[in-house]
Length: 87
Image (cartoon, rainbow, N blue to C red; front, side, top):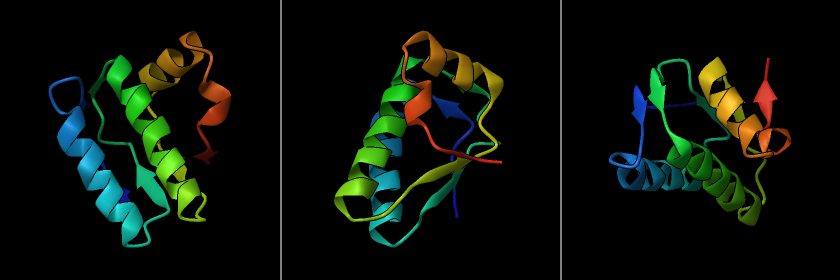
């Protein structure tokens, strides 16, 4: 399972994107978002990019402990149904 940094923002997105891609390439299929304390719209794009990469690799990616604020952003952009959560 991959852990995610506490801030997912425009400033951290590039590094987080590459870390996520590396984790997916290593076989990670679950990302724990429980430590995410702050996120902006780039976080939603980041999660969708990870899912796209996982699908290209034949994997199904799921997110654990998605913060309510991140869920609200995804809903605002109409992509909340695309983010697979594990409860």
